Length: 318
Ligand code: TXA
Ligand code: MG
Image 1 (spheres, rainbow, N blue to C red):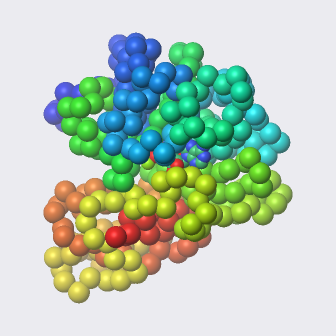
Image 2 (cartoon, rainbow, N blue to C red; image 1 turned 120 degrees about the vertical axis):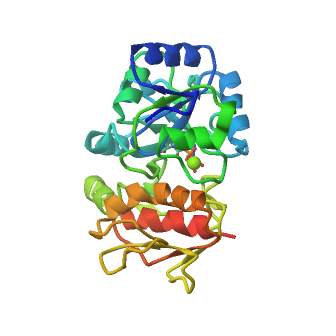
């Protein structure tokens, strides 16, 4: 297919070099990760991070995740503890973000962390991103590459649709395999999941040999921006209900639902991992098809289903 987007580049030696030069010069670029696409900038450069907040229209009280190649490249910036190493060994590189105490000598700019004394660190597994991280000597602050409160992008084209010509450079790394954002776990005290993801509480409990806390939609959220409306396609969403009219979109799950023009099945095989990987793509598709309302069938609240329901509840917030 012809590439109709002049700011999307396929991955090769030339575009890799251009990415590295851009990042070194303090420019921001759209990059693939295994979870969702991100908007990357040098976490050691205030000028670069200011551009991210501006482009995303993100409130500066909402801190960014800092992406490293491996734990060694992170150890000057954060205090690594025993819980961290247990989870790192099992899941990294991969879709999990750790909130850790910032070291005094850290070079991560305060604007990245909204002046908190903690830093969110992640070690992404996407091959292209790992090659980039290996070839630069600073970590990448990288929020999801969507305008604040919109649905996260899972294809290079989604990123281009979000920012149009305001973003000059996006690397095409194919569809994001996981399709929802990383699990965020706070390890500065008793381990606490701040944002559910594909790595669920059950397996984390097993690895840590203790029960992790779970921050529900309470008022005592540690992470700013976790309460508000988010992941929204900009269309009213009604959960656990079927539509009464055929002109409304219906997001379904499992074999029992018919194949119809307004039906969008997250997974016919009732596979929750597959459902997670389809969620944002389907929300964007429904929006493009100009449906006015979205109804969603019940999705089991276990494993990846916990993360799916978390995103749907936020997307449905008025
Ligand atoms: O999968 C992902 O994590 C993607 C890809 C691009 O890596 N990134 C992502 O970033 O989802 P973002 O900015 O859309 O979400 C980061 C979340 C926010 O809810 C933010 O409030 C929280 O992490 N966060 C960042 N730093 C934090 C900190 N120091 N303490 C608590 N929460 C923090
Ligand atoms: Mg986001």
